[in-house]
Amino acid sequence: MKQSITISFYFENLRQLPIIDVRSPGEFAKGNIPNAHNIELFTDEERAIVGTAYKRESKEKAIEIGYEFVKPKLTDFVKSALLVAPQKEAVIHCWRGGMRSNAFATHLLENGFTKIYVIENGYKAFRNYVLDSFTETLHLKVLGGYTGTGKTEILHALKSKGAQVIDLEGLANHRGSAFGGIDLPEQPTTEQFENKLFSEILKLDTKLPIWVEDESKSIGKVSIPNAFYEKMGTMPVYFLEVPFKERVQHLVNTYANLNQQKLGEAIGKIAKRLGNDKAKLALTALENKNYDEVVTLTLFYYDKYYLKGLEKRVKSTILKFEIPTVNPEKTAIFLKQQ
Image (cartoon, rainbow, N blue to C red; front, side):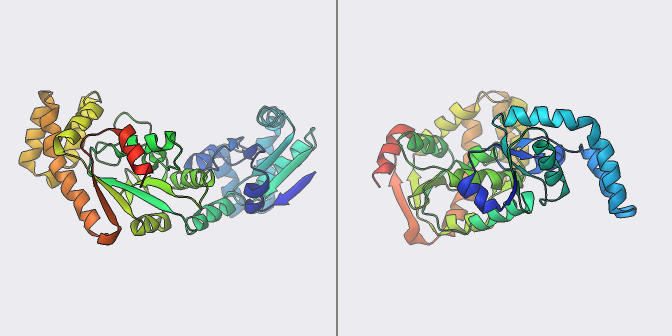
């Protein structure tokens, strides 16, 4: 049986089924439905050739060329699909729910599969669904504080204690500063970051509070969706005031063992904003492994930068709490009571 379904029907009724994305590897890498398995109908090169034939010659010619590419792979398609969906039921999509997904679905049904659901308008429908979802009501609690407060660790501690948490920096593979990408995996595309954020929200009860870290619009190379970011800007900020020395020590513990060359490159990226003299002092301190001095010099810049963002908020939404040390566990217990 082959059935055409909407993207909303999939998320409301069929999320337990394996989902197969038959787009090319390049399309999949740019963005995909989290948990989807990529079984490509065409390689990137083959897709380009078929697309060119469609534009320059005809639809019929493109189909003919496409079939020649696909024919040697037909047996492998079934084997790969069985690994993903051994129960012989699956959800399939391509870019717009057209020939690729429908041809793949028909082939599986002709070779032993019992139920195949094809998503109408494919991945394009999913993307519209994702972007629309960010406009829905969310009750966010924004965790704020100067760099070195241990906000990410506090979020993790909150989650371990049963609070609902979205770790934006974790989704972005970036700690949110010029130093933020050092020794972390490559960042996803902004598109895939949005997909991952949507997937995280889907796991939560949106009627209850959700903790997020106060962030700028960009986290490294990815951007927070406009609707979600605007929502963050209107929610209460739980601003943690931690002594400067405590923050310095926490950052030294976090960054001292990272790649030294990349730390130097990161200082170079903020040299103009830091001031060339301070940047030179910071680089010299790094060479001498005087990490306290490196952090102290760069923190003055980041504190000033964060304060500018904080001042844009409505004062009544900023709730300040003095926290004596960077202690994620104790701070999480305290915040859960607020």
